Image 1 (cartoon, rainbow, N blue to C red):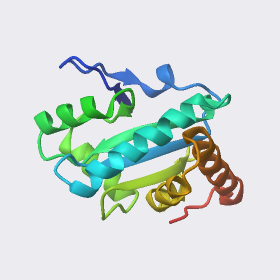
Image 2 (cartoon, helix red, strand yellow):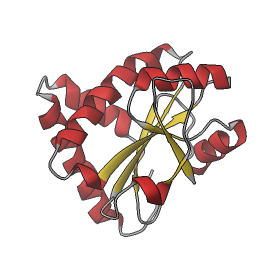
Image 3 (spheres, one colour):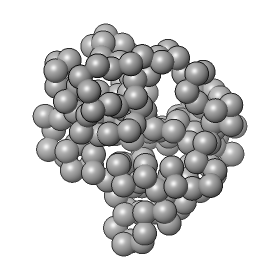
Length: 165
């Protein structure tokens, strides 16, 4: 699999997963959204806030966010990716993006899934609700991020290699 880091330019670089993620990676967050979706536009801001907090944690190398576009065109994808800034994304390929959504049974957007990086099994499909609830507390983004990561890490420990929804 390959991922593209968001860049301000119109060119998108493609990288191999093993080249960009540390061996210590435990949790992958898959974020499904489309720029045409008003709920996604609102949640994009929340995801950026939480991601900033996650990357400020001392052990930030054990979690990473990957955006999966639900945009209708490559132009929409590129514009949306630039607006998300500094996150990784699955390169635009409608069939590949649909296959990923199907793999995790994503039927509504926005969706945020926490996935076991070692097995690919879903820890939780309720990431969106968890983020909204955590941000509603009004705590600082680093505290929100720590709280969310603790929840996902506990789910990872309880997962035991089994698929959760």
